[in-house]
Amino acid sequence: MIPTFRDGDFLKKCLVSVLMQDAGPAEMQICVVDDDPEDKTAALLVAGLGHGRVEYHRNDRNLGAGGNFNRCIDLSRGELILLLHGDDTLLPGYFTKMADLARSNPTVGMLACRAIGIDEADVAKWVSLRYKRFEETCFDDSPIWDLLNLMPSAVVVRSGAYREVGGFLEDLNACQDWEMWARLIRRKGIRMTPDVLANYRQHSNSISGRTVRDGSNVFDFMRLSHIFALGRPTFPLEKLLKSYATLAYHQMRDFEKQGDHEAARANQKVWEATAPLASRVKTLSKHWLKRLVRR
Image 1: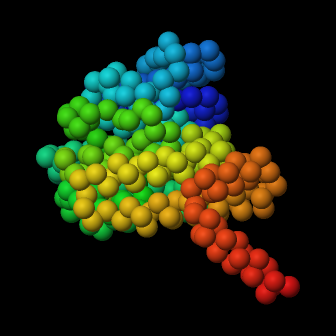
Image 2: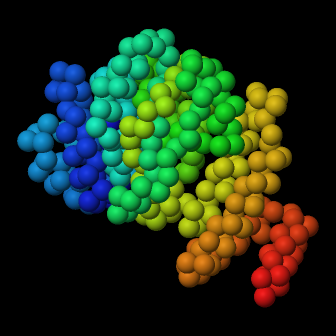
């Protein structure tokens, strides 16, 4: 299931990576779910690829990322569901290896592999880390509380597991999948292979890219931390809230270096709204001290 919103040429690359591994309609449903009720680019692309092999659905109104993920689940017919974002791609052997992982772990609800982070030009930037605890069946979500190395293109979920734990939270913009995966791990378990089988694209026009520019990712991460803290007595809430406030500061500095003053100002406002005054003074003092030392 391929949720898309104005993914342009990235969607073509995504579909090609899937069609090259097509197991046939009896084994695999391939479906693009377009969350743009106005633009016809995705519809035309799907019509020109795969000779009718790819299904196409367009929402009557924009549902947002979480709403479109839920729409994908509603439209899916398979036992195993991959929500492959329209700007991501798969590496050869993905479906065969993930199906083998599912068959060898029939009671586990969530299956995962590792992914390569790529940019707009398909240049590899990083490889997601291993979660060794997840390489055995695991129901403990604490490994992803403060460090997420699971990528949407690298996660396959049993349809029954999605329906049992409930839908994606539609009022989160930056981390619906993170919250969903924690729920799935706790209730249905995870099994992960260390194999690298997918690509995860990072670019400024993606959902995550847009929320970083305006700093709203920080508010989402903070809300997610409050959600995680419920029913998890050992969750390090105060530590993570402080770290996310600091994240806004670092995003501000990164955008300043890039010359993106609008995004820098947006993140500055988020930092000022989330970090206590004493913390902001301490951070700025360290920054100016480092500049003086370098001089």
